[in-house]
Length: 235
Image (cartoon, rainbow, N blue to C red; front, side):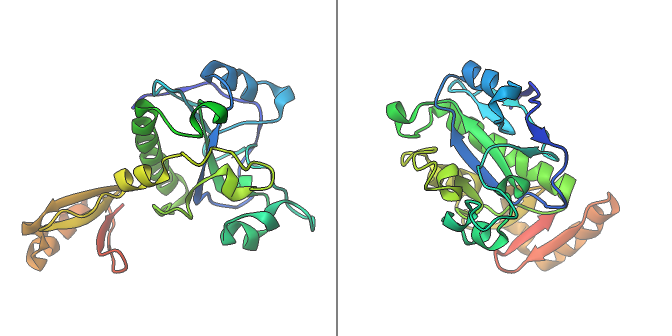
């Protein structure tokens, strides 16, 4: 997947100490070129980190280390939009959701597709989220879980203001399944820099795994075991 850059001025440098652990999906309500023009216009006061065209092209407009202006909540007031979120994480943190989210704008109009993606967009979304998760691990030292609490829509952040963003037909389940496919039989599950892979069963032998671990660690990697998901995590 190729990601091109068209930087938006609509951002805040850094994230005020927060680390992004939620990816928010939006519908652009317009064309790809129109969305890029809008989010790079200072007058709009709007931006996404990435925009994905119907044909699968991906443009990055805001660096992951910076705060995009996409999700419509604020900090420091009693009525800041967070209290209406569908997500307990957003309600409990009660700060500007932009500080700990990464936003992706998908080209489309709710009235036409109800948020459904083209085949090319679906492929691009999986590749892009894989890239984002890998980069977040590299930059911030955390892993964004593959779940509906961490890969969400704008409607999950501000349901009163954006009830149709990205729309009921948005393919969350397809994206999550492709990011985290069911484990094939006789394999071991590996999380290698945020990308899930399944290795043939012969490495399930503890001795083989122990032999592989010093090799990985000698090349500067860390190797851990996540008991909750029974995953070998390589970083």
